Length: 360
Ligand SMILES: *Cc1c(COP(=O)(O)O)cnc(C)c1O
Image (cartoon, rainbow, N blue to C red):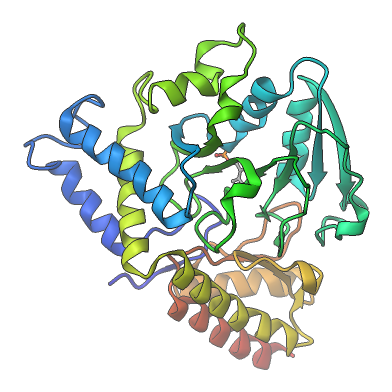
């Protein structure tokens, strides 16, 4: 057992059994006598793993038959471009909801490609909340509506997804995929860089409704077309073999833990421990509105920056790692992804109580 609790925002904590099985496969994958890094992405051993990884994603997320799961590269950031390049041609309009830095980046890329309507933004409130349904100025007949399901930097999260009628939602779920249950059929595309809740950096999971991959501009570069990857089941070119292996192990671990429903319960419990500390203290201050709180990333401030520096140093000494907040928000941020155990959050809460007693 490791002594360190890793609160990093991403790349982030991975389950210990996953690190163990990966270390074995780095030496000898599936009794091939070769490392997972040495086998062909077209070998029968890896192909079996790829097929199983795809079906595990579908199983744990409850993905309907008319969707395809892809394993791509370029991070969530490439999806900011790929989504509009594939869907937003020919004078169509897409709605985007601006809830933070990652949403803004997605909007910036989409504007290079087509017409973007920012249907709501909480920028004027420093992104401390998710907009309410009545604030959304949705475009009738929009080709899709893009949201960021969890705002990793600001610590806000959509509690219920917006109702966009027949317009498919497209969601950047990089930092809360697999953390809670939801109805996939409301979404046209879901994408996530794996390095927060699913695995290591280097692979991006894309869940796409197959009909949306069908109708894309002919002149798009081959690698940027969803249809290329759907038709070739993610092996048009060399896929990130090692990263996909780790995703496979994470999914097996998650299933073993009781799947997404059990993860969700555990995540709610973990977040409650921390928010209870914030709510019962006048020393610590949560930075987001209560109805928008993320269960994955919890930013908070202390009374002064000097105390914040001292808090960070003390936390580090107690093996509570990665708590420094994003530079745009300051203070602390505790990321509580699936693989972070409840004990880690309790240890952090105990340290917070102790630190407050000493300094208030
Ligand atoms: C981390 C993160 C990204 C960036 O992902 P890359 O894989 O580094 O491109 C995008 N969106 C959200 C919500 C994130 O948390």
